[in-house]
Length: 250
Image (tube, rainbow, N blue to C red; front, side, top):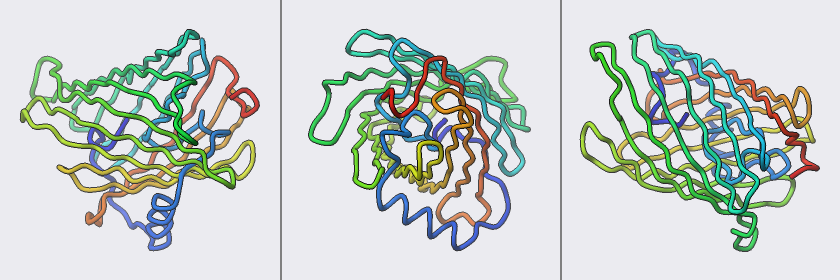
């Protein structure tokens, strides 16, 4: 779930150290290919799910006056180019608003330029506001995806593309960047910045830990909107892969 589709942020302090770390990480680079199957960030990697496999994600997100329980199954076929799909099954806030998202992503091992891997993602998001009796399309997005392998077990992810907002008829441009750093085969750190020409930039920090290497992972993250003091959001996520996503299998 990306920044523009999030529920409202949580009130509370954001430490100076955390802010500095988020800015430094996001400006410096992103998590390595060895941990790319377990991101704590919204910025996408072209190859997220093992070929022919599926993963199921579930997480809780808490923000000011709102919370959400979500499920996000995703699958990928084996044929090249690989076509994958995922569904954000449920999002609810205390205001009684509901959201439903769906996405398709295409990538190929041959889509490389130097140290970068490439892909494409198309997604839609619908919502049902408390005062409405039906779901309505909120936005549609097309993103180019790129992951650059960096030294020292790091990688940089970039997502760039337009988002059409149905209620206003306007199109915004999204640019998300995430730096991921694998401390070892089980533990990784991530920093991210999500920006748009029609919204404030969001910084986040997260950690990824394989509880069962290649199969079951846990993610903890916190983020805030730049220029908004009371804008912290926390999330806890579990990620289960039906096919092994261990570093050796990438």
